[in-house]
Amino acid sequence: MSTARVFIRLSFLLLATLVVFNSCSDKGTGSGGNNPPPTSTRYRLTDFAGTWDYHILNSGSTDAGNFWAYGTWEIDTIGNVTALPQTASNGDNEPNCDGCVLLIDSVTGVVTIQQIEDFHAVMGKSKNIMVGAATGDGGNHALLVLSKRGQVTFGVPDLAGTWDFHGLCAGYPPAWSGWAYGKGHITGGGELIFDSIIRSNQDEAVPLPSTVTITPAGVVDIGHGIMNSDKNLIVHTMSDGGGGYSLGAFTKRISSFDLADLAGTWMVHGLVSGNTPDSGDWIGWNRFTLAIGSNGGMTITSFRDSDGDTTVPQGSFYATVTPPGIMTFGYFHGAIAEGSELFVGVEPADGGGYELVIGLKR
Image (cartoon, rainbow, N blue to C red; front, side, top):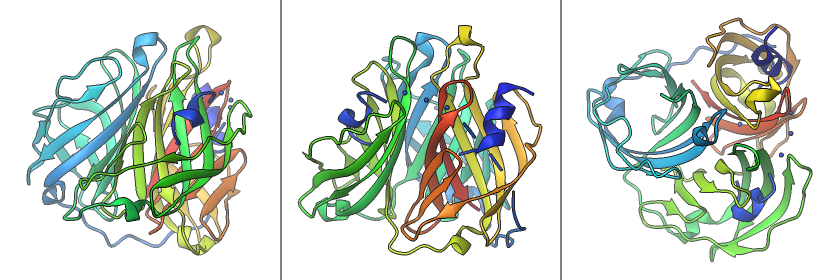
């Protein structure tokens, strides 16, 4: 059984400020459950139309293969992409995927790109978020999140509330790799105060309070972040003080959540970082379809990783979800965003690496 198989079999699943990631480092991954109810959401090419902001983390087996990028796509009503110049930690600021053509499955919401064979993403039911994975020209592996701009404006009061955060750092030794998760709250004046944090190297030092700002367009100054139009998610990229590169997400805490709310079909994308090529450990992305029953039972019904392995992991397990929407099983820790369309979490990957996963409900 390959390392990729092992890491998915055990427990599958998806930041905080620079201080959070200054000492991110650990291992994991999984599946089992009841048949979910069918989805009634239908997708069309016209659902692409608009302005999309993306954040990407690349994980690779060379120093050049680890970097972040963010930018903007303008997409028309038939899926044609006009890409603006991006900002990338490796200095590659050319437009990313300019001229690409997107396609979407009307039933599943699965998104593909004509020019990129192994690009795979899924659009959320709200039709204002896409999450996907792909392999780059240099063999590096990428996880990306795209948020569609809506007819909304943002202000500091939108930041107020309790937020859960999960993030992944990717870096080539001696740069630091690892994950972090925790909880914090932002006051009505924009002060970010961390209540708790756990890093993969067991460092639980809580960062000092800091002030966060947001522009009317939703740009948040945690590294470079974007708040989605539902105002329940902030995705960001930043360079870690230990030489690594990070992708993270703040999810607004739910006031009340029941396990049965998980029931349905979820499309999950994950990225593993931190392993070195001479260790024999696995680096890459994976994607799978997850059926969750009303009792929390989970079953993986389809699977593929960046090596091309499509063997569906066997076995079953059950998730535990607390009323605020914190999901746990095995070594996995995740949070369900307000609105119950998305979860994000981290876990140790088998062989000493680190994994971030993001799931979208169909």
